[in-house]
Image (cartoon, rainbow, N blue to C red; front, side, top):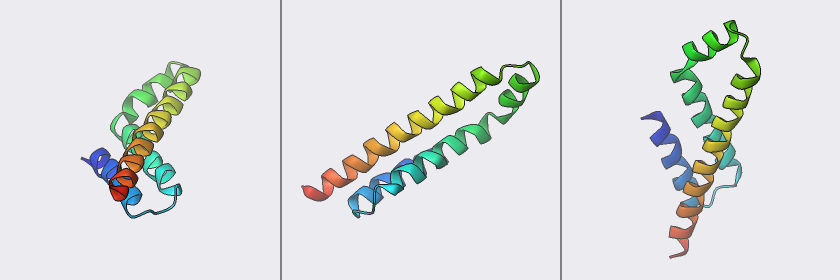
Length: 82
């Protein structure tokens, strides 16, 4: 539910023509939500010495959040133009 709210907030920010910084804020919210849901797996991976893999996973999660937030922002901005 929190992920949906973050993506919806990005689309509303695009519709309201708020600055592009809202995309980064929503991407951080999405990555934080993902980490909060899977923190036990991250902790287990650190205990097993998989820090490089975990770091790459966190960066990919942030990248996915950035793509999702950017697409939602663009769709909101586009709806404003129509």
